[in-house]
Image 1 (cartoon, rainbow, N blue to C red):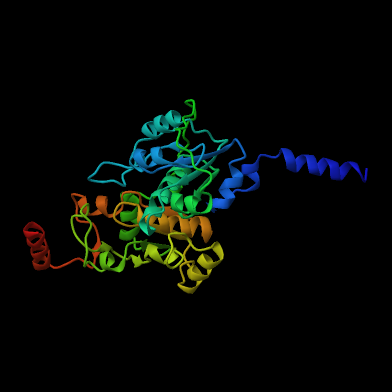
Image 2 (image 1 turned 120 degrees about the vertical axis):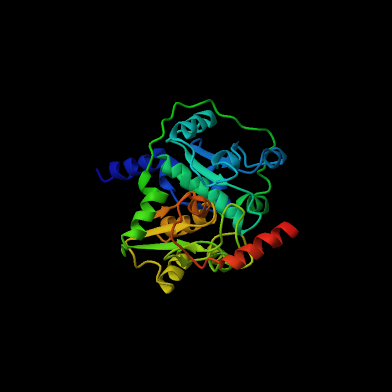
Length: 315
């Protein structure tokens, strides 16, 4: 028996699917290169089709970011479950695959695209998902010998989505929390300070400012200085502890359209491993466009708003 046990254990580790051995939310280019040896590893390229055609990670399918987003007026708005299911089946995605999402890695904002698609896949019920740290930019730098030009398409799947509603918070629930003055949650505005303070406004927002009671937690801080790669989980957890961002039982993340907020959600939920981190998908685009006046802070005065509109017209 002394000889049988080691042989059995060796066989067990060899046949266990690789994605189950290496389930990390953030993978580096060299790690992904080794993961590509496993047929269950499925890269998802969310850049535009032109960029994909010019070169992509071997085996990657093309699924541009715009296909995961809402209308121009409210880009963060979620599609229906039927629409998402049709997209998932068209792409050929299955629960058994290890999905690795990547974008261009052009800048810090670009990471939000990969984080938002990661969140969307998790919201739809997928469990084996990762984001390529630094995106295609770092893949080219660290694995330049592994670039494909021929498109990869998968056979359509029959996957049914299983929504995970606890990952999201919608307008009515957030409003109820604010009106009830509940104090068991923290509300984080992921935008740069100028937006939070009401000195800048996104085109999709009808007014500047932030949701009442929000704390500014700018998304840029999570990146390695001078790079477009996210810091290590150890560094993330240290920053979270230093800023006291781990003190509430529930964390809610928003921005203008749920893009920068997806970075905060990813970092706080998947790397810092906080419990009950939720994304407000439509964010301020929906909140400020609502027919009813919803609670806001740091909003400009009426005169300042008129001046801003006049300046925009002149420009």
